[in-house]
Image (cartoon, rainbow, N blue to C red):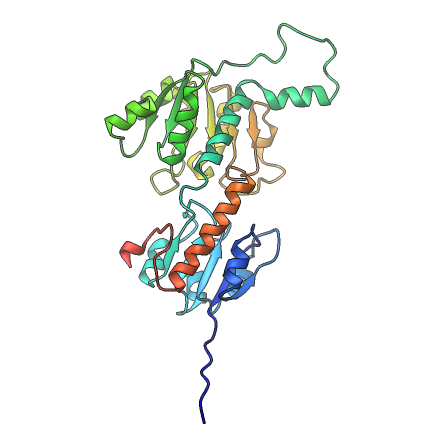
Length: 333
């Protein structure tokens, strides 16, 4: 009598329903469980959902720490994040357990750079204020010489904090506005790349003092948490603007609120925050010289679709025995 061997499908957990093709790609090969809600899973739901899983596809909202990894058990081989950042994952703990951590890499760089420049233009030309002015019926005279005066973008100085893929994409866009671009980063670029981008490396103090627009594109880690606070804002021009499409924790939001309220800087535009979503009573929401967006840096159909494909492929590659598309820690496992 011939025996029949049954191969159990590997199990994958998605912490949120995301754009296709991730679900379809994974469902074709594995047993897929999805937290099917617009909100992220609670800690209890997350710990329950990942039990006995071989792979996890998570988002920035999911804190993948030691307690969560303990709950996952020994089957877990890979965590693929639907993001370029991975500060929500305890990479050290995952590495100890031989769990591969992967991201979507730099696929969202151009979309985030587009949004960054949109915010530069919107805050400097008071676009949001102007829209609200018209909608509330305050526009009583056709053309007015002193109405909603803003700041020039062309021929101004753009300061870039962190000149990685996104920072470089922003610098390239600045060329069209004939902006002088200065930057500070943990690692200075080669002179040939600086020349190609038309950027000049400066110290942090010089970056703060000389930037008309300071845009943040560095990662969030122990060194960069609350990197910009009261002391830094006091060094900036009173006519300057702060743009943050990176991570909220890089900016001390209490100090930023004070800087905006006391006019230490002219304005700011934010897409990310220390705690998301913002609560209704958040002091930032009371400031008229601030634009606030709901973390939409990569929010284009094309970009989120590409992110979906890469996030799924990371899982597939690792579970099938090869390397992920965009790895964080495979060299350490």
